[in-house]
Length: 447
Image (cartoon, rainbow, N blue to C red; front, side):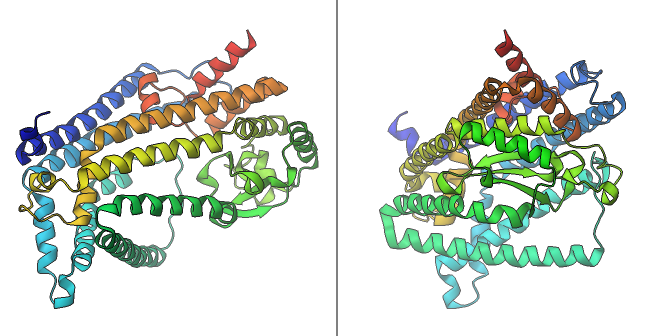
């Protein structure tokens, strides 16, 4: 790359547009591959047919096809076409100018205040841009798990509260970001890294105390037989049983799930009560007809917990933190290299010498770093998929291979997850391997 090319705003603009188009066309290509697989799969795979009726499978298939085509059209119209027009005609520079004109008082002309107005206007624009798609999706794509709608007054109150909280949080974050960059100057990317690092560590420390109220309410395990089996399993691998929590979730449509997180004394294995048969209740009179019979029998729950213990024993939490830190450091280094380069700002419509901090963050993280972000996301997804295989193998080595196989089959059926996916699409989009891939790997372990 020549120096002239690097300093030419028009060439940089065309490269940014190319990144946007190619990245989204690649995502559309992968989705078309997945749609083709769904079209070809008209019958329930034999392995899951005892758990998934053909009628329900047909509904899941139609839903996935409809949702996928909607995503393709939405991406082409709202992301690719409008995105190219926004970049080419300098929309972000124009909107920043509008934000500057909204500064009616002298104190509002400060970059922090103009940046807040810019971000709020941009959020409003994005909301209006996504509104047609949201209306179509809500009216024309019927969910497989319809939820009762709260009263209109409740929805209005929630909307107002969300807007107020959004404005407050946006204002605080933008003002803090602008002042940090102004005060630190060329060391601002380093300050941004330590700020993100501190935020990450605070989240990791607070998660153990926020999971219970966020997802639901912690409840005792009523099933004494299951408790005995879990105590034997945790004692077998050296994991404290007191750190295995059952959460009665607020929303039963969240799906059947269990997960491990944390380290040292803050580690937890959380079991949603929807994972347990009949939500783990001895008295089933309070359950809805849809909830009766859902969930896993005791041996299958133990197998799922054995899988989560595999994440703990293999140190996946630490490896995930390390990989995220490597990704964060590389991202900040690239950002530091690009942030001060004036032609990038000129490429999106700004006059020479005008380099707003918030717009620079938006353009670089949202557009310029697209190739790196895409490849980094692919790498981290494949890492998490590798973790899932390792955790499955750990459960298999403990002797729960058969139970884990049955648990996967029933969970996919209960959670209405379409069981078939294109391998290439799955590698670029899914944190977990497909159910058929995981079953295939378990079969390989048996040989």
